[in-house]
Length: 455
Image: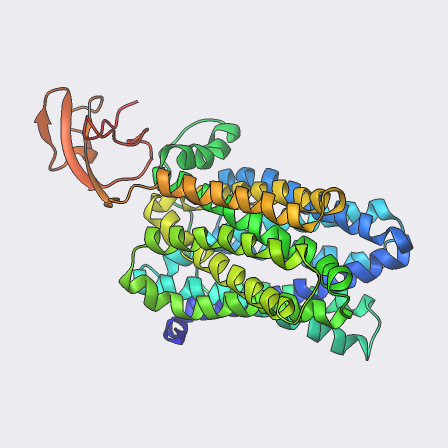
């Protein structure tokens, strides 16, 4: 897997990603402590609102950013967003009101909503080889998982030496270092996109791409399954461990660590697995593991804690982590396969927005159900949602899903450059090639017509 680091550009970008993740991990811990200092017992409400603001920023800002990303130099955009996030982090220690926290969180997460999909869209252009890109996706998944495991430990170690305000300074330094690494490489420039229209139309293109492409519709259903399973892990673990099992705070970290361990192990083996099985096989199979795991949670939380239930919980959390990783890691391959190179920023922005829309649904649902209906009902309802997402994905994503599709163009003139090697037929010009939704292909080929590509 590490062989992909021989590519200098990717090596610098991956290092920038790791450093930025470590910095934002420090900010997460510091923000919780800042909220407690300002709001005291209401700190949970402050952080809950901040989480909702984060998701709203992701859902609303990312598509707009995708509309501009094809006309702005990638390096300049990534660096400016890193520096914007660093600036917000350096201001956070000076806030004294809750509304100031919420405003700065919105600015911080808005910059992340621009940075992350632009970064994701850059990697497949830096690594055009499918095997290298698959390894890069696994390494990215590892970076996220290891950050969730080690950033809290790093923050705890630093807090023995300095106050939490200095953690924000560490975040600023990390993001500035990330910006410097991005500056040190040459990235692909903006591509010419033959698509006209106002910003609203361009922002909507990514969503239209997902709506029109069967495998991308399936990807959204898979995101919903992951969000349902992930919500019970991230929202309900602390209550489950402290109240149901009556275990100390350190056990919360252990339980979340089990989820992270499962995710890391899956990311390590995925490059080899994806070399033998299709993306659909791996992702849909993993998605069906999620409702099974949530069903297993029901007896664990419904019965009094016993000698078996604690290890069973850790094993279940590890299984959820592994299944989520197996669904999420290949998603970039699916998007790249389904998108013209010039439209990658819009596609990744749409996926970023739509997937976080799923989390915006399941996060509050997990919290509300746990508070009003109990953990067994919560696990059961989220399991039903995960099952629905997995079943929808299996139905929407054709088992036979070739890259090249034969289709007809009824509306292009004979001398159009896109029709090279096309042959005349009733109703237009017929040819086949790797098929994506773009300026020449407005809807997915139908089964009976062998694919009409006209408007």
